[in-house]
Each structure stands twice: as structure tokens, then as C-alpha cells.
Image 1 (cartoon, rainbow, N blue to C red):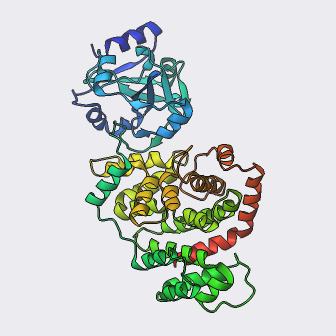
Image 2 (image 1 turned 90 degrees about the horizontal axis):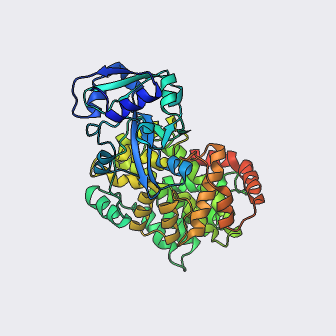
Image 3 (image 1 turned 180 degrees about the horizontal axis):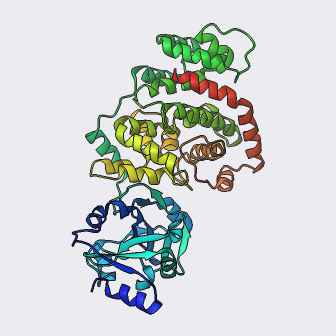
Length: 457
């Protein structure tokens, strides 16, 4: 018999038309699909997930990976992959690894990735290692009766196998052992130490910055930008500090500019350095506006917004090839969460799997190693974590709210929606503040764009 017993019985009982397609006996479904050549784009597959409420089958295209965040939002459940042992107990009539994506034949609820039900033709595992099932779209829709449909997968090759979770302490330890992490640039370190001295003066900060002609020029361009509407001439960094920007803002901008020099990341692409600076400056500006409304320190909030995405730069610096692929996937999958894309790109192999915790956590680890202020560490480390409650949560939520509002402007690396009302409630802000913030952003957008461009050069 070419089909698994329960699958064939289901097709016969429901009168579902199908064709059996014989193949050479294959050691795995991957091997069987690889031999198909032109037909592989029609292949669908099943991923089995479980939680305390039971088992769910997710059916998606073979060349896709599941979007864990999309699944969580659709189901409200924290589902985990079944083990091989659990799977084979459930599919005892199938050869190991050859699971038919027809949940109704096995009395399983099915979640169907969008688009599959509209396919004209599909191929899938028959449950045996020597055949596949070919089916037209009408028959497939009959076989999938009662399934729920939604955007559940990321387009592109991936691996949804179970992975062991690592604690952040383990991730930090492995990062330091496996990779040469960039030290904080010497100038950035000197600026950081100066800012921790409560007796430091504007003159000392200015002299430190003026040791570096490039940094001097960038700080001067910042002070002269239309953002600050200063009517007179600014001829020195000290004048920029005392007349326009203030000690904290100059220190924070200079720290950000100097710190970025630790990373070798391309300018181009949706995740490149150009868009990084634009995102960071907009986020810092909004965080600074939010701070007085939330009982936070304006300077510290600005620094949290400015530096919260440094983990993305570290990922690009350590893994240039994978970073290029992440760029491509980000552009091709605007509805997918960034963390899901990172898990797909960086979840392969024993060393690189640590990057699957997300660039936020990686950035928090780097900031901790660089001994940046605790709110900055926390804002970077958990800004990808919705509903965070804990230490420095106000600064985390300021960054999250700023990022959420910037998505409407197409700014940032995330595009899927946030729970803005929950963030406003957490920060004890009225909904009307959103309109006020966006009006201010509209007024300064040209200046922020020009400033971002100047910081690249």
C-alpha cells in the first residue's frame, strides 16, 4: 500500500480525489523533495506543535518557516514542537519523518498558512518513504475542511526543529567564547567615563570631543541643525554644549557616534547603517519627548532610544553573510516579526543558534559588557519583548512605544503592529498624547532625516 492506512481510509470515506506519485525510496522527506526538481515549489508540509491544551498541526509550504509570534497572536497559546517520539506515537501508521499534512485524517485541529487553500495543485507526504500525494486545489480544500487560516509562515528556507533554550547568561558566555566581540572604542569609553563624573565640565567634554576631527564635525552639524533653531553662529564644540545642546545631549550623541565605529556594517539595505541611524535618531527624539510625561530622565531616555538597536549592528558585524540574508528576508516578509526572521537565519548550527534569542538580547549583553547605564542595557535587551514588566520598565516601554509609533512612518526594523493602548496604559499616558507626539515628529522629520544622513558621512 502506497499511502498510510489512516490517510487512505480518510480519502476513501470523504471521496477526496488524489493521485499517488511513486518516488525512489528516500531516507527523509527532505531527500524526497530535493529529488523533485521543478515540482518542489508545490510541496506542502506539516509542523506539529503542542501545549497543555493539546496538539495542533500547522500546514505550510515546504520552503517556509513558521512565524512563532504570528502563531502566538492567532492562537493565544505558547506552542512548542512535538518530539520525534511523540510524533511517531501519533502517526504510528507512517514511516518516521513522513507525516501527511492532513490533520483531519488523524483527528487533529489544523492551522493553514494563507494562500495554500488557493493553490491549484499541491504535493505532500503520503506517510510512506516511497510515494507522495498529488492533489488539486478543490480536493485540498475538502481535505482541509474546518481548518483556520492565517499568515503563519515566513517565506524562504528554514528549520523549525526544536531548539534548546539558552539563558542570557549562557548566551553571554558563549558569545565571549565563540566570537571576538568588539570592545567599546577608546573615545566612546572616555566619553562614558567623563559622563559618570558629576563634576565634569562642558570644557572637559568639548576638549575630549575635539581630539577627533570627524566627531567634532558631526557634533557641530548636529548643533547647527534646524532642530534646535539656534539663531546665532556656533564656532566650537563648547558653544554647542553651553548655548544649544547641553552637556548630556552632546555627551550622548558623541557616545553614540563613537560607539558605532566598533561595527563594520554595510550602509545599504533596510537594516543597513543608513536606516539604523534614521531609526535611532527618531526613536531617541520620541523617547526624550516621552520622558517628562512618564517621570523619566530626558537624557537617559534619549540614550535608551539612541542605543537600543545596537544588537542589530553586532549581528551584522559578526555575521555579514547571514546579515545580508536577514536584510533580504526583512524586505520580503514585512508581516513577520523580526525575532522570527532572526530565528530562521541564525538558528542553524550549534554556534550560531545563540543569535536566535534576538538582536535585542544580544544588544543588551553588549551594553552590559560595555558597562553602559542599567536602563540602557535593559531597554536594548528587552525591547523585542511585548508586555515586559520589571526593572526599568518605564524606559523599556518608552522605546517600545516610540518604535510602535514610528512604524506608521515606515521607520525601524519591525512592521507588525504593537499594542499601543497597553503601552500607553503602562506609561500612564492618555491616548491623546499619540497625536501630540506625531505632530512634533512631522514638524522635525526633515531635520532628523538630514541629521541622520550627516552622521553617516
